Amino acid sequence: MARLVFGMNVSLDGYVDHMRFQPNPTLFRHFIDEAEGLTGSIYGRNMYEIMRYWDEDHADWETEGSAFAAAWRKQTKWVVSRTLKSVGPNASLVGNDLEAAIRRLKDEHDGEIDVAGPNLAKSLTDLGLIDEYRIYLHPVVLGHGAPYFAGPRPPLRLMSHDRVDEDVVRLTYVPA
Image 1: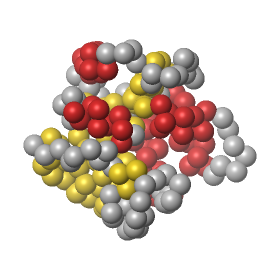
Image 2 (image 1 turned 90 degrees about the vertical axis):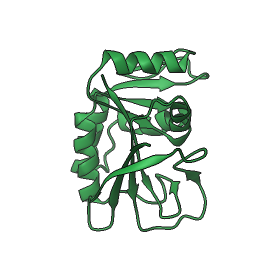
Image 3 (image 1 turned 120 degrees about the horizontal axis):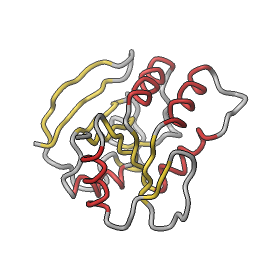
Image 4 (image 1 turned 60 degrees about the vertical axis):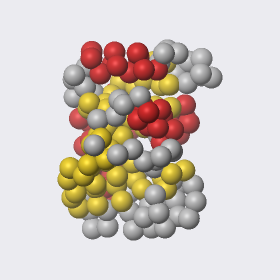
């Protein structure tokens, strides 16, 4: 049975914003390794549209960008959207019954499935489907933006903490 994991870069004040702080090469390598090991990823529409950036090569990419793009492209993706009619390579749309579809994915697969995006994570948290939360805590204060927890924080239990690079700590929680 697959495990659903919601992990994102987070500011000290609890916000996620991929445009305001980017991973350094060490953290980027960490995310490449994680992407290579995933069974797949579940995206909400907004996060999926942001991540479609990796579908096409860009001349200004460093080695890490190309490596992440390769890992992302080969990965199976499931997209939760009421508005999209089609999705890109290795992706499929999730039907209207979110809970049944995600439970089926968990039953049919092994390994880790990444949950991408706070709003989708809230929906899956409300359904009791997320198995682990990974907060990559960065030493920045944003003051506004999309919060990591899009709703009330669920009861959690700290499982581990580790330093991923010189500035980022990964906090791993499971539902309490």
